[in-house]
Image (cartoon, rainbow, N blue to C red):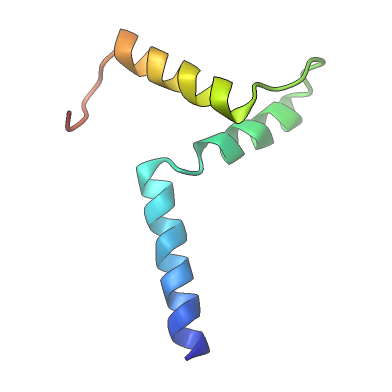
Length: 63
C-alpha cells in the first residue's frame, strides 16, 4: 500500500511540474540564489505578475 501512495505522490509532483504549479517554489529558490537585497514577491503577487506577462506576450498554449 505504501508503494501505491508513494507512486501517486510522485505522479502528482510530476503533473504539478508539468502544469507549472511549482513555479513559485522555483522562483523563490532562484531569488535566494541570486542574492537580491529586497524581499521576494508574495505568492499572490507572483501569480498576478505571471498572468499579466502571459496576457501581454501570448505564446503557444492551449487557450
